[in-house]
Length: 278
Image 1 (tube, rainbow, N blue to C red):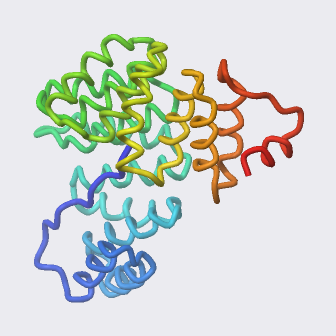
Image 2: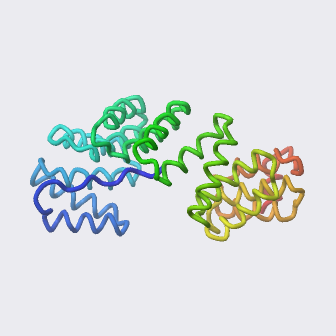
Image 3: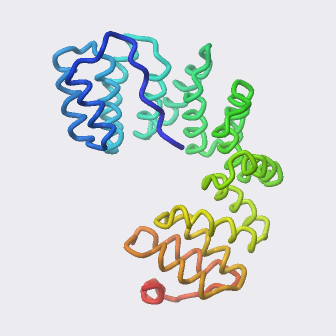
């Protein structure tokens, strides 16, 4: 699930240094954004905007633990659901999931509702394996925002984990009509079709997603699984090679995809598998 957005600025206009930090963050210059925001905070410990920029820059660098302190100070100074949501993401990223969930539950109870907090809470619950609770959070969010494509998609992505593939499929078919060609919707629907054994239909959808995201190894891996189950071993193995190329971290997933398919292959040694896909 996406990271929560930066909270809106509720104070006076940001300083030039903070404006530069915002621009640096938007341009992906996270180290520079961190430096500039830290300088602003050094001059004014009460600058909530600088605290949020600094925290986001740290989180992008996977330094979630370091992001917690400035966010906790900021949330003590101002009640802001955006800051709280960002803090929840930092806590979860630092492995403090129970604290993140407790905080985000309080944030989702606020009125008027801050919808990104529902998404963040569902994400933390999902990461903790609490699927039923994550589904309930998304269902509550849809009561507040019934037209939200994003919440419907997130719900449909979770429902197969409760073996509610029919309900997920119904939601996704409607979303596909509302947003034709949306890659996330197509991929989620393809996943349901794959689980239901409709391999050709799943492969057709994955083919469309791969055309939009040729460098996405996970989508290509799922595409490979569909092709292998169809018996198209040559195309399936070719896509496994593309999924693995330059990504040694994918060796486990690609091995599983090839060996678990009803039309796959088995290797006694990992080196044999690696050589086969090289």
